[in-house]
Image (cartoon, rainbow, N blue to C red; front, side, top):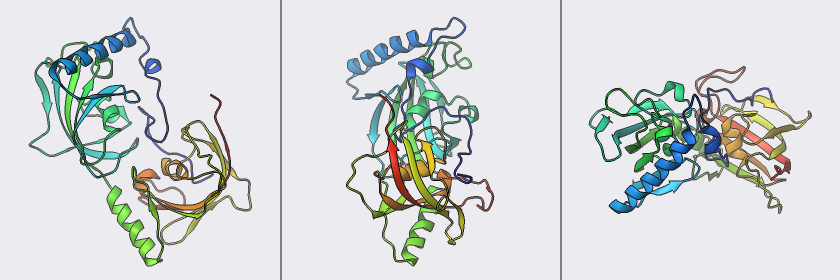
Length: 308
């Protein structure tokens, strides 16, 4: 377990890998500001606006925003604490523009760490971007509690304003360079791997069981693993020791490890390949150099389903 522990910043959203956020819990009232009440009212207002203007935006219950995809890209989705490049134009619903990066360089930011967001980027647009892929162009409609709340922004955005963001998800930084390294490693060793279509991790199933139980958020997974680098250096292993047990979605392990495990069933044996942005990124951890692709061979021993 020594070199599997998650290292990262604050979390705004636990994202695609089966992790559900209770928006009502996140929007609790503080200092007399009833965020949940404003949220419900704004959802109704946005829906009426969409209906009146013939806009086909869908409400995303996990993100808590409305999203209208204009152009679908063929890239990957992102996860928390990864650096991405985007363009975005922000407007008030039926109102004026307050920010526009189109025509200049893309904005680089780390999704899931709201303390790093450049103003006037908001939590609401971040929640929407977690649902998109590289290359997607979309409009995201953000209720005011996920925007500037009752504070507003500068002189451009009044308090309790519903926000509209036109966005272009340009790319996930440092992902494709590592995928190229992984694919070269596989080619050099004459190995064929499957590709996770959402996040780009590669994995090889060595033994597929007949068990249909797969890990989901909150499940407790027990497995044996060995971790190596692309130069075949072993940096950690549980074999001959106590198996690793961890809970999905609780940040017990690096996110790439969870992404790999989500493709497996109980009793499966597999190897999965994790780009550095899903591992330790630019941090050196013990024998693991910074920006290292991680390889894990695993055997799933048991999956204890979370209580309903």
